[in-house]
Length: 239
Length: 221
Image 1 (cartoon, rainbow over the protein chains, first blue to last red):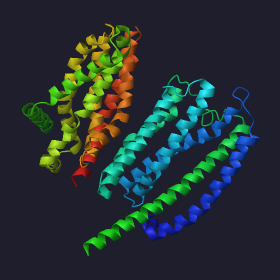
Image 2 (cartoon, chains in turn orange, red):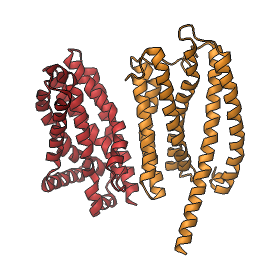
Image 3 (cartoon, chains in turn green, orange):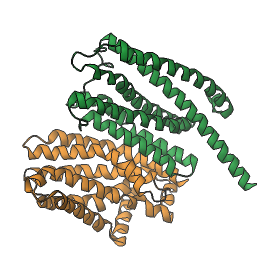
């Protein structure tokens, strides 16, 4: 693991994976959109608007996944002090915030025709909105503290404190009486959704996942380069 | 135990001598609550409907604004560093400071709340629930706020960042606190909500000082 703590090794590996992941993301996205928009059947009740689900659900899954990734990376940074861990966490935060925002917006657009309202303060929507604020607070803390090492540790502590929100979001539809529909895919009894809709959903989810990997690696390489620039500037100034 | 008590006593003495903390938090609480009838209109039915929420939001904001008193002055004159270096468990030191902070800024809100509830025409049945939720919930506010205060110690003008970090974490306390009072007002059983709120506070009791201690230690070196 510490082999890749070396920036050069990491950059080389990341570059190769990134190209591969980018291609995969593009291919899966095209396939997924075709499956979602053309092949999947219209819902008997919702009609064509059900197709928003194929963007909304993967974004929501990614929003939660990104925060879990961020929290795990922060834990690794605090416990094992792997040099790339906090950088991975920092890089994934804006991506996760973007997915959360996308989930909220697509959900809102779906809610208007489905529920008759753009927004409702039920447990699922409220806790996802809190997730968005947690992401923004995390990014703000990184920005606010000047010393990179201190900022990394402080942000790691914050990420772990906010991690308690993730199970709350996941189980909010079970614990509370909510307007948002209960779990249909990741349940103890297996998916409650028909395969003709499940497969496009899974393909889109994989596409989003590959997209996340692409973006994450790109951001990590960018962050490494920024640190190199900062180090060079410091060396230049002090020499 | 004795060092804990002496830290609490020290912080209380400092709060009394520096003055203002308690009074400022109280005045802010009263002012914020007063703004709502002026903004929303004096219609008693509407005020009664929003009273629990308004009281809790104002308490939240007052607690949040008083947070920089927790560590900032000790951090600035170096005594926080001395406390950490003293060999005492940092989590214990932080807990002692949180207890003193709650006694000076959280507890007074509890005393002012029923009077403000009268101003907002809150239904009589909600008063017990109000006192209980404030008693159980305001310590959680100090506990959770301590994490934010410790994280933003080294940040200049950290006030806004503190609110961004702490307010999302306060939301569960707000939700359970208000739902308990609402349940009581409507004649339903407030006990489940109160128990959940108590669970929150009790969970924060060991976890928040631990996280805040980690944040204090990394702010110091």
